Length: 284
Ligand SMILES: NC(=O)c1ccc[n+]([C@@H]2O[C@H](COP(=O)([O-])OP(=O)(O)OC[C@H]3O[C@@H](n4cnc5c(N)ncnc54)[C@H](O)[C@@H]3O)[C@@H](O)[C@H]2O)c1
Image 1 (cartoon, rainbow, N blue to C red):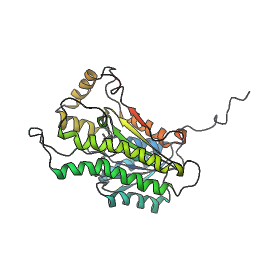
Image 2 (cartoon, rainbow, N blue to C red):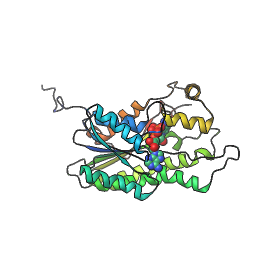
Image 3 (cartoon, helix red, strand yellow):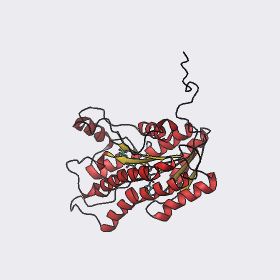
Image 4 (cartoon, rainbow, N blue to C red):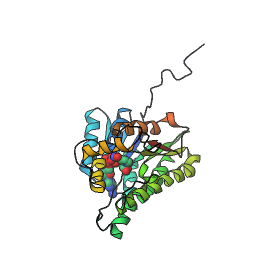
């Protein structure tokens, strides 16, 4: 009996020939890696041409420099996803330079400034958080899907929206500081389902990758500003709070899950919320 089943010589998670946009493909300045940058690097290692889009062009270019130094392909696009035009710019630039789009990862988030003593936030700051965390995701899903619709073949594109367990889990001590983030991510979860339903007939998939605590620059920064925890205290706190004692994940766990969702191996998966959280939402 043949044990090949037609898959033996297949390279796993091969993204060769695919063009993948990573929105949030730069990263917040500071030591360590971000989820978007790690995903961009890993997608390029798996053969994709990567478009690193970010409001911070220098950070996006740093990601591209890592990719090209490793022999991969990519370029940076400066864009602010807090408005529709900024979102459109990313996909116009991609189509004009690469002529196609196969994957899009929305890996952007902001926590607007707030006053922890008065537990208050300006309406402008609140709205900005919703614009970036949610509306930008909606427009990037829409514009990405409209590009992917032009592709030929059975599976024409895959969208990965990066969410957070903050969208489904309350924490004691949370306040207005996390509201535009948590609401935005809850909206993002819903947008994924909309995209998956709306574009399934065109062979386009969309999934949510819902992260728990990940050791990234932004994760450390927000733990400090929202909860007053220094980076070393963050690890201890999660070990204490999460019963399964898995601590924090690394950005590479995010990147491998995202690459799986971008690749054809996940072609039967759409509209899902995948929790990558070390069991943080399973048992407390
Ligand atoms: N680190 C964690 O613990 C954690 C947990 C849950 C979810 N996440 C999610 O992971 C994703 C990536 O976050 P990260 O922790 O890797 O940080 P990061 O610094 O790598 O990513 C954020 C990126 O978004 C960019 N950005 C912010 N506002 C923008 C705007 N208006 N337009 C364009 N780009 C903008 C920043 O410049 C930065 O490059 C986010 O969606 C975040 O919510 C992270």
